Image (cartoon, rainbow, N blue to C red):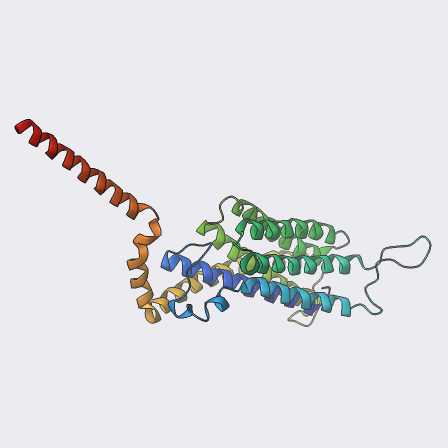
Length: 301
């Protein structure tokens, strides 16, 4: 991961994941659907219904994690060795092993998502959320240890990345108790976008600066502009979320007007026991009226 490609590819994955999460949340808000089990399009029912129930997020995590693991191992000439053969033995490639641990966690998290969504008899949202939270707890520990020998520009970049990971860890932890909260899922999508875009920005700052000249660790202006660029990423990603919601609303209004009508017709059935309870009350009222009529007839006779 200590290369330009090693920062851009994980950043691109996180951006795609954040965009997908933002689109899902926007669709759920527009149709007032459930965040945990959004309903599928009527066209997706039938023989293709099983295909649309596949956990694409889990598959994306598995594929991306496997590719990054292979890339990290291939970057080390002679193989990723844990210790040398000298006496006393010393650990080798500490940062590369940390990168490998991150990518293994990503792959395992994808496996859990696929297992919960497609292999278990019933989807376990708590298992998916718990695994994701555990992944980010470990990621935060690795990042804090990762900056031990860094200074200047690289240290400032990693501090800001640690801030995003810490906030994302807090949001995911709260979601363990309130997984169906729109505001939390929107913040989660925003933080994934921030993490991905900042990783890509870090690759350009550290390895391929736009000016062609490396950033100076002893120049306070360069360090201050790193934070300025981070603030620009905050604004751009917030505008991106707003644009996704607007485009989603426009798309569904223009191309899927029937879904809105169908949702309004089916809305009473989502209330569960309201229908049977109303019928039961009607039967009780009718029986009371019959009893009152019988008593009146007896008293009159």
